Length: 298
Ligand SMILES: [Zn+2]
Image (cartoon, rainbow, N blue to C red; front, side, top):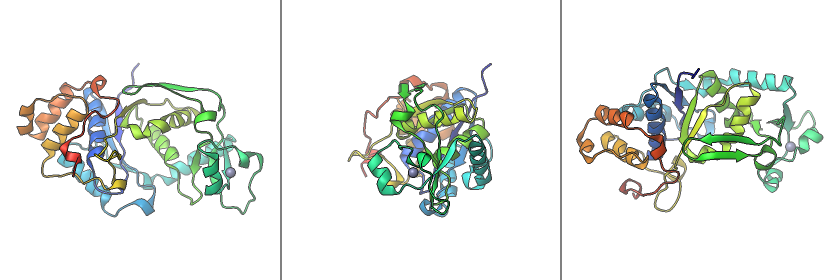
């Protein structure tokens, strides 16, 4: 039996919606609608120092201007801390969690795979520690087929190691929260930016450890600006011009490899979105961005 399609868009409220996130939101919305599925918005507001007051509401409003509205109330990760702690307790009870006191410098020298130093030599009870997942089968390859990027494989022991689930500063790690919430919301399909492709395997493992079915993954190309940087709030991507949602959606569709006719530039957003759903072909989404657009040059 196929599960009912449930997809989501999960922005961090670190600034206004920019074009790169509209692209991810639109792709996940179109894929959900083309499957008669449910589409949700989840606010990843787990990292207060990085957040901008009012950004969450701004993002929700900007999505609404483009006709993209969550089918269920927006879930705020800041309201979910007890659920994350509960999962940590359960992992601890299964002996799948250990404290790590290694400092930034040591971790930097190690590179991306942690050497389990603190599993062998537990830190003192008074040390400030992060909590790491003890991967139960680090040598078992993780394999999945991404609907856009194709077959993927990573070997935990070589490619990522024991992931931090709670940070030294006491904040829950993104990797934990995202998986716990995808399970909680019954997410079956994740369509998001390819900058997150690399962490999908470690999330895949965590789904399995938490005895849940991992979602189907699809990673859309990350749009670069003219200087080759990812379009994101961190490098000051311009906020979307909310006065021209049809134009924004039209160009987003084109960048997603769909071919809306020029006549739709004069259409309303409902007509454009409806065209998008009817003509959505995820196979046409390019693996890498293949054009730049005047939108990104200013
Ligand atoms: Zn350590």
